Image 1 (cartoon, rainbow, N blue to C red):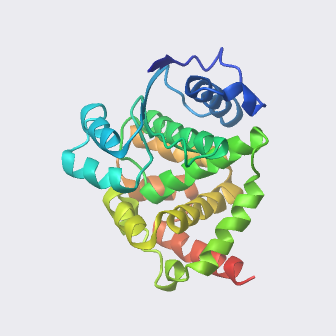
Image 2: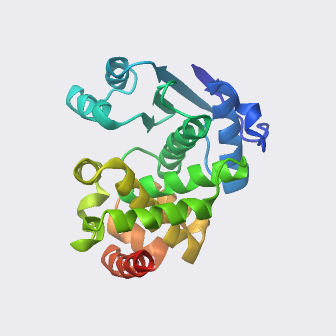
Length: 256
């Protein structure tokens, strides 16, 4: 389903009833992302919706040109993938709610925007890309009156108390900054706690420095592929120093 997205003419909805179809949801959420958060939205995005896991796996190979080995791994646990100008979704209508479907679309569209900002795929720290995508998705749901960012913060912080191993041995953000490293972490610790932690780390940066810094970080990859230097320039500290700061913050928050 190819969709033309003109950020200037798209209207940002405030009522989720205006997003009853997948096409309306993609257009509406893209408008919120462009107008509310100033995110880069491509002129055209192709949306694929698959009704079963096997079709999703084949779609990753044929439509997103993912290697068969990676497609098999992703299709075991993922329900969505955002690529350059593409969103691939595994639809489970019996198991999903409207809120979760809109959250998924917003999350994957954020990845599309990150790729637009960075000028290519796989750039930037993967844990930060996922955390930012969750932050934008939750903020979009808040805009639509379906959720609250603060509620998500509280739920994610409570999740840390239920999964103490996430903070026990340090975060090792250098290793988990690559797609492979993040996926291994995710598969070992579980999807919910890992994504909640990624969200809290991105939220910590945004609360301290503002969302424009986050956009600037991804945009910096157009001129430099140096992960460490780009992070330090954008956030005024090294990845190692940030890990020390955010670990102390998360331990204090989860102890309350």
